[in-house]
Length: 62
Image (tube, rainbow, N blue to C red; front, side):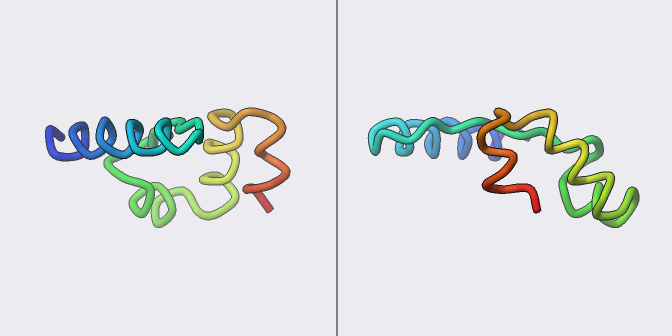
């Protein structure tokens, strides 16, 4: 929604100013909680894995 889009822009700018690359991740449904409840943890991890750069998969997907 519009509020989420504005928050994404603001947080991306703050991250970039701090020298951090921000990557927006997208849920399959309305939000990640809905994805988790509908598809389960393994499916959520799989969906996120393809959105994260390979070197960060090791850091963030257990």
